Length: 229
Image (tube, rainbow, N blue to C red; front, side, top):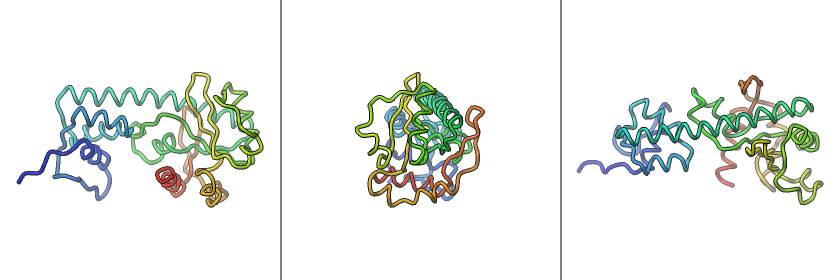
């Protein structure tokens, strides 16, 4: 019997596999037909960029209206990415003025370090890692740069010693998560953060600022922690 029509999730899986060595297509050989449901799901899973790359590669097809909606969803996500990158740039420049070393985490870093085209990886906020010993200096730097905290700390001493991260807002409202560890609670203490700081990714350009993320192993470790915890 003929293969069943691929589900929306099958289409997204095929799109995510485009360009990967040894990629596995879950149903048939494609091309995969993009549905309105798949476009909506691509936004939920933040894979709009991968879907558009798959369209360009001919792996994913669809009628003109559906393809146009996929492109529009990607453009909308990229606008948010630009706002987030502006937030990251403001924070990194503030840290540099106060001699606070930082590593860019998650979406901002992965898009520039692990994709040939950063537009393939979209994100909605900014995550940066600073040393726990730089807690006070980092927070002072952000306040001086115009960032605000939506909620005050419950106890400053507890936050400095135990907190995984604190949330700030840029002057234009975008979210910045300042991490002191890549996992919370006991999980964070089991991870050797000195080892994470001993290495770094290659530099990448972020609005004229030379930024760094975790090395490839560190990025994978954080992704695993985030997925499990």
